[in-house]
Amino acid sequence: MAVLPLAEPARTPTPLGALLHSFAPLSETERRLICEGLGEAHSHAAGSEISAGAPRIVMDGWAAWARHLSDGRRQIVALLLPGDPLPGGPSRVLGMNHVALTPVRTVEARPLLEAMSRTPGETAGLALAWSRAHDAAQARLVAHITRLGRLSAHERMAHLMVELMDRQRRAGLARGMLMPLPITQEILADVLGLSIVHVNRTLRAMRREGLVETRGNHSVLIEEERLKAIADLS
Amino acid sequence: MAVLPLAEPARTPTPLGALLHSFAPLSETERRLICEGLGEAHSHAAGSEISAGAPRIVMDGWAAWARHLSDGRRQIVALLLPGDPLPGGPSRVLGMNHVALTPVRTVEARPLLEAMSRTPGETAGLALAWSRAHDAAQARLVAHITRLGRLSAHERMAHLMVELMDRQRRAGLARGMLMPLPITQEILADVLGLSIVHVNRTLRAMRREGLVETRGNHSVLIEEERLKAIADLS
DNA sequence: CGGGACCTTGATTATCTTCAATGCTAGTGG
DNA sequence: CCACTAGCATTGAAGATAATCAAGGTCCCG
Image 1 (tube, chains in turn brown, cyan, blue, orange):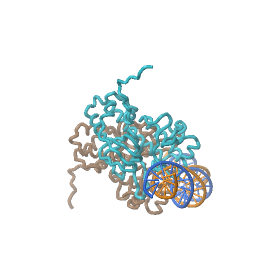
Image 2: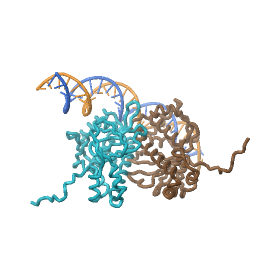
Image 3: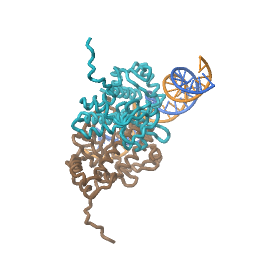
Image 4: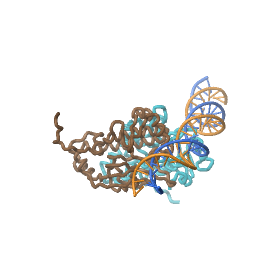
């Protein structure tokens, strides 16, 4: 049996690298840039607010972009998974803020962005991937609007599960039909615009139908094709 | 009585000019550019789809950015009012499309965009206004998510009325508390994620409370402050 | 072992949709 | 001028969906 070649150092593919690579093929140079050309890291406790003066990237854990109403209601506008950028600028506009949903580790994105603008010739693929990732984030906002406006609770849940599977598969975080889901039902409720009780009942019904299956430590196994059918996705 | 000075030709302020001016003060050169530097015009019949290969600007009438589900349900993601840009690129992504809700007149935006990149020195204010208008559109998407996810039917309607008043006031289309509302209740339902019947009942209740008052030809008079209070807006 | 965070469940109520008519108004062709 | 039609608004009744209220239950951790 041949010994596996070790000349190529085992480069642990980070979620950011995998995610960008899923949007456009990256050269060796670009992949190295993604692994090494990142700024200062920072850890955020679960539940803490992430003040984003400069653009950062989520490396580990889940965060969210949320809006609070004065009576305590909360709507999560977007979930931020490993590999996703945290918009850097006017986050405070309209009562929006970033929250760490689990313990989160982020890094500064500026060095990467500067490298991209400094040597555009060598980072064309990276720029394309970055731009496509941005478009995908925009498309997710639009999908979220449709989900909240026109889908029932079951459909919303199915739709979200499919979205999360796609995103985590791109980032190399899902294996087969199994993916992390490290958030509470209360957070799911704030994403889906439902009450926590109704999220619980919806999940119970879906478990009974064999659509999702909780697998210990904050992971779920999903029946992707059936969920897609329910969510009216191709 | 002094004769009004006529040296300055009466420049009818277009909605586009007024809207951009509301985001950043514009020089005389910039205002002239907005009036004269626009591309080919096109009319679209009510109900027709607007295929946007190149970026265009709505000059008159209301359009929408909509997504259709396979069973006929429809969600309007954004309303496009006079002065608003129609995103030019990947509109077909994810089953999205542009629809004229009333008879609509649009013009090509390219000449204006080219003028901005050709003479950046003379169009700094215009560029700032354009960028802020873009940010505002993004903020509206986020507000729409919160509206659909966490507000009741009454709150949604109030919130939308306040948004439409603000937008039309900026574009010079509202006078006092009176603004155009040239869309059917069915379209309102597709914006707000409600059934047409419930929109009707919600409007009736709001009329009875004196919050809105229909004024003939597709116009409404609103009690802005009370609506803001209902919608949890400052 | 106690406490806290999270999940689960039943009972009740509120909100919203669906179904089915009816009315209203403007445009159309005889 | 007048039926006639189409599109839109309105309303009642019934039913589905989701929220709220109120208890437990489970699990982990100090």
